[in-house]
Image (cartoon, rainbow, N blue to C red; front, side, top):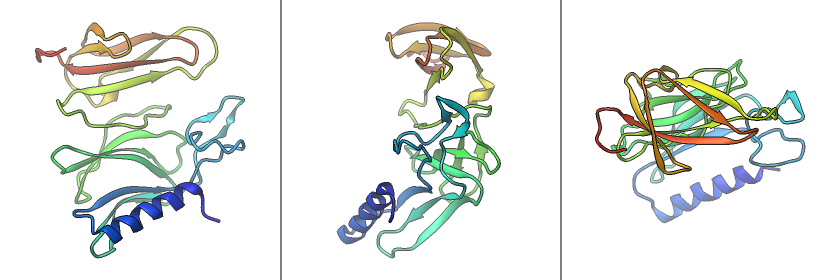
Amino acid sequence: MRPIAAILALSVLHGALAAGVPGEILFAERHPGRDYASHYYANFGYDCGDENYWLHGADGGRLAILNPKTGQVRTLIEDAKGAFRDPCVSYDATKVLFSYRKGGSHHYNLYEISLDGSGLKQLTSGDWDDIEPCYLADGSIAIGLLDIVNQGDREISVTLRELGIDQPCRMCDLWRRKDAGTVADKLTVRVGSRGCAVFRLVAAKTTEP
């Protein structure tokens, strides 16, 4: 029996073929998560009750493009021992931003690749999960810092280099909707137990907050 996610994906693709959708369709192919409670959204990181039980799906996956007119599929990138998720096409339709769990790793990091399959670039690194990236229309970057350790408030730090940024940025706290100052090298935020902080980063020379 196919997982529900796979059935829905096939339904969408078959519908696109039947409707004669113009252009092409980008998709990620991966195995569902391994949560023993069958929560569909529990598909990365480890179980909150057992840090040795990893929730990501089985190894093997790819990023691919479907041509609805011909039914042909071409692979952008594939990893028999890794996994891909969250593809997002750039506004000029030349690049793809996505989350990639390399073979041999338990964690997703952010990568970018051209739509012709060239120019693979790693944007983030570290023993944590970077997921659900998206391009913003104005070129700025939004990030979320999540604390999965249930040990009270603590500080979480990430360098701009780890985010693929090579210049100072101004920060906007998206929860509180206010300016949070300028960061030149390292962003340090105090986050509540199992809480999340979300910021928008924009080049410091830009006039918009």
